[in-house]
Length: 200
Ligand code: SIN
Ligand code: MN
Image (tube, rainbow, N blue to C red; front, side, top):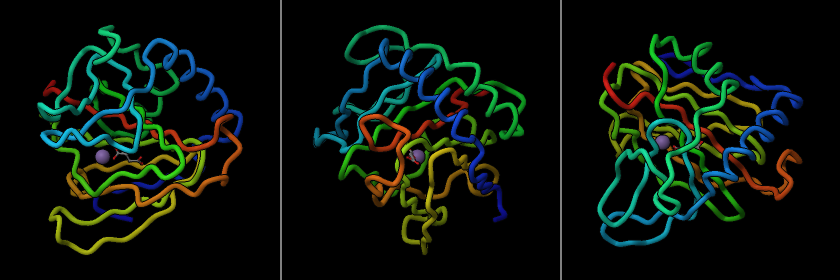
């Protein structure tokens, strides 16, 4: 794949995935998953979310934005763990740290509509995503919503980098294939999305 889209299957082996899950568990104990709602309509997402890092991506009736605190606990987001930061320094090709790590939790039936990541100031930094747990059907199109799309299966331990000409491509999750992984005790899928938000 070219144009700044880098697919790194099995970036993490099983042992490394288990380490990640343990580390994430500690973070999520401090910043629990919550259910965001869509701007205006207030319709709940099917995905539950939390964040790590200085800034977290949130959605509520007022809109999409980045903010420094968990909307329900009022606490700052936990720091992005070193093992996750390391992925960014190895694969991003970007010389500054990410400020945000969105944590998406897909339970049975959860999905994410086609969208672009465009709430950041600095599109020269890629988006780096890590998949854990059940395999997802990831859909990716072009930079126009109406463009043609294709799908890619994202399995546990896979890393995907959307940079360069792919930074603003439409993407989403059609569905998660229940029972395809034994990594997460409660099943489902967790996706970590690392992003640079502010211009350095
Ligand atoms: C996202 O675009 O925020 C999530 C993508 C994924 O779950 O792989
Ligand atoms: Mn996205």
